[in-house]
Image 1: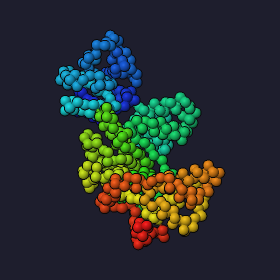
Image 2: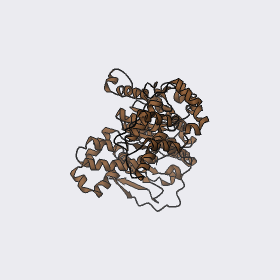
Image 3: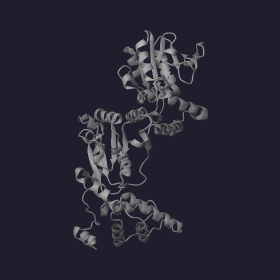
Image 4: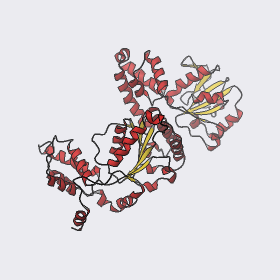
Length: 487
């Protein structure tokens, strides 16, 4: 544990970024490492308690509630003091005073999930990050907790959680389903842990995404890039001296399928998909909480690697501390975390974020071409009907009708047509007229927001296209296209 390393280096005042769920584990680690007595206090207690044999016990102090104005008021006998929430309780002047007045034999650790260190404190009080444990540590801990070897799936299910939080979750399984624990039903336990973990990950702005519900249409060049990326993640690539791929920026018009593309990419790579965006991370009222959230996301992604980390609206990244944390990690990371960042306005990203070495590719996703529109319509129709019997002329009419539409708009129209057919007691019987009618009910964003859409497309030459030339049978020759536009 990094905390113990810092203590061994002689630090006497430290800040520990760790969830409150880890209180007892941190105390146990301190007791195992040190022969000194271990003490604990939080604002919920009027007394300082002593940690002994996995318990917090009263040491007979006089109740001092209301008279605690400084950490110095809490120190009695020499030892190690873990103060929970102390950074919020006492202002930074008090902590500076503590640092200079602390006597030999005393160590003070301020535990907080999102410690906010004033500039005056950063130079004298080190911030220690309590990282989530890696696979082998979790495996050994589960073996001891369960008194048997855990299945690999159970170990994977537990990754991304601190051990204190994991123990609380497994204690609830033990209490609620004793048979599952006694019989070692790893699948039942793993499913419960995954459900609980999902809720905990959302607290730091991270979401675990599932498989795509429909195959992605078109984007042939992007798919080819992803197939190459899959090979570059193989052990053979490491033996050849190649580093792990870093990721790509998916840039394009809103609604062109960047989210579905991200899910498809994770599926093609055979990796779990984690998703986040800045709105889930940033806390305007607590910058320290935002920084702690970002560090937690980075830790969890590395522990769960190999994985895909999807970042929506990446261009909304704030400058300052968060920018620095992410930039440093992206440059220095060695774990197989493949980042897919989706953006609408590439020019809003800081130049250093798109410099060589941050991402492998910048890929532009444009409006679907004729052949891609046919493929998208067919793929979404397949969700609602077993067979599609449209003539070639029907397809040409549909492809023409959905010109200037994004992939999301096409998918929405097919869905609405399927719902309308169902309400008319002809489920699965979707006609060309149904689809053309749905198309007539909306104005494509390409036309509705023409200026902003054209501003994005104007810079498309700065990136690799996600789609190659349309060589399908549905391609409209340029001469016919211009004739259509003139009409």
